[in-house]
Amino acid sequence: MPYTAEEKAAWNAGRAESPEQQALKKEYETGRKADIKIPPPKDPEVNPEVYRDVYQILFKGFLTQAAEINDVLFVFKSLNHHELEMVKLVGGLRAERDMSQHFLDMFLAYGVFMVDGQNILLDRDRFVPEIAKTFSVFPPHAKTRVVRHLSELNRRANVASLLTEAFSTEQYSRYRWTQIGGLDLMSPSITGVGGTDRLGLNYAQLTWRSINYYEDLYEQMERDWENAKFIGSCFAGKGIQKVYNQDQERRRKRKEDIFARKDAIIRLALFGEDVTDQQQQGRAVMVSARTTEDLSTQLERDLRGEKDWHDEVIEAYDRLHRDTYESQQDRIKQLTEAHQSEFGDLSVIGGTGSQPLSRAEVEERITRRKQLQAQSIHRQMVETQFQEKVERFNKKLGFDVPVSVEQTDRDPSNARPLAPERTPGRPFRR
Image (cartoon, rainbow, N blue to C red; front, top):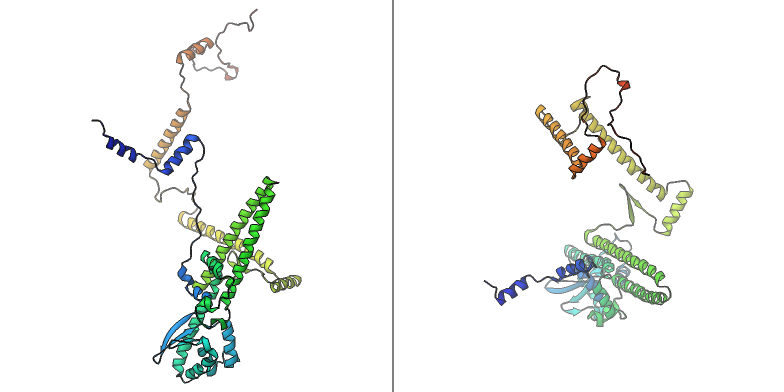
């Protein structure tokens, strides 16, 4: 029964080739590689929730925490380094362990952002003494609890300041920099809160501004360098191609360094892993000299004949190889003692099984080995395809003459090989 037009259309639609199949077909039919592009893997993205406090500390200037004390709503804020210095001066702090009640009262007063919906930052000089006097009459256990909550808020601000460097490498950080890069970050037009212009920039904002400033300089230098290479390619194209390859490798290395630095900072901020310039040498961690003081100390130790960092690295490397050799020797000694205790002086060849072979198994293996050897010899023999021609050739040479061999008592030293009778011929006909 012939197919209908609808069935033919459905059959052709089912046999339609996908774009990947068409590309492969083009590659094998034309003998040239098709334009199949695989996108390179991207760096792992950081969850924006990690930078939740960073947004607040950068674009508002502080973190906030609401609390209700004696039916009055308070909103506390984190303190920047300017405010902490002012609290030390006003509170009369002489030593970090000698915190008087007046210092704690001023610390809490400077940490207040709103009281019952009223912004304290607009007239801070008038409100701070009154708030400090209010906290002075608090019971000790209540005041200690408020201090702990405010200290935790400042700890979160410190972690956010640490994450600022990692945040600066994100693309949305650069977008934000293009919007407010040339403005005062603590201006009320940026923060949306009145009175923030009197607080000053915190460490996170200073870090974010400096990183983006140098990133702008780097991009400008890269643009100038690309223009210079374009001009140079007009005169020496092959020579500039090497420069292009070097730049590609340099940019790849810079990208890897930035990602490694960001990963280390996030691990330090979230998991508490220490970030130090350490080099692992076997089982020893060697800290290299990174500052001028470290280099001068290392030079003095070298001049006095003491061990410097280089000597410690060599010793750690030698110790690693020595420990590895000793562990291998101990392992060999244990295996030898175990062999002696189990087999004694017998020469035992290891096999695939743990049980000894029976007589029948040994005979079967020998027979099988002979069969494999006979099959190998048979495969090496070449069967002739022209048997009749071979027979005529052997008859012409006399190889088909029957030869009888009998036992004799003659001396075998005088024996000569049998040769067929041949008529002498002439090599050249004349």
